[in-house]
Image 1 (cartoon, helix red, strand yellow):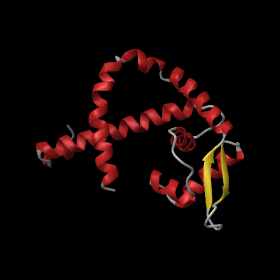
Image 2 (tube, helix red, strand yellow; image 1 turned 30 degrees about the vertical axis):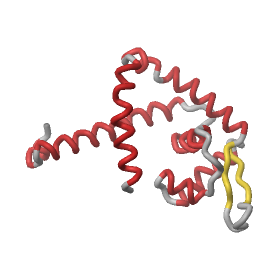
Image 3 (tube, helix red, strand yellow; image 1 turned 45 degrees about the horizontal axis):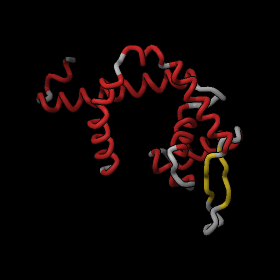
Image 4 (cartoon, helix red, strand yellow; image 1 turned 180 degrees about the vertical axis):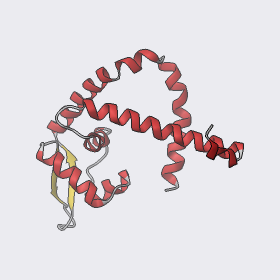
Length: 153
């Protein structure tokens, strides 16, 4: 435990350590993934493709920015790069002509599948180090934390 944490209560230390570990895991796993992503994809771009392959409907750039908790400008940049690669389709909104609607293209679905294959290989050593059940046991609590944070943003 660090010196700075000694002035925290034991309960506060647990919360701090929990979010610290989650943050470090996110940073390390994102860096490893991005180093291996195909098609010049960044983690942000892959995340947008991943969002759409879950069967979610087309969305406006603003809706995507809100979902990812980034600025509209940051999302617009990510979408422009995906569009240049042919991985998303951007068309005028049917009701509001000033707005756009974004959806994944077949090339984007294919790129996502390519990424899954590459990421499987990039994390093969991780997969060998943990039993599926060990990770499966963690998922319900992580989902509970995610749901709470999503509902309380």
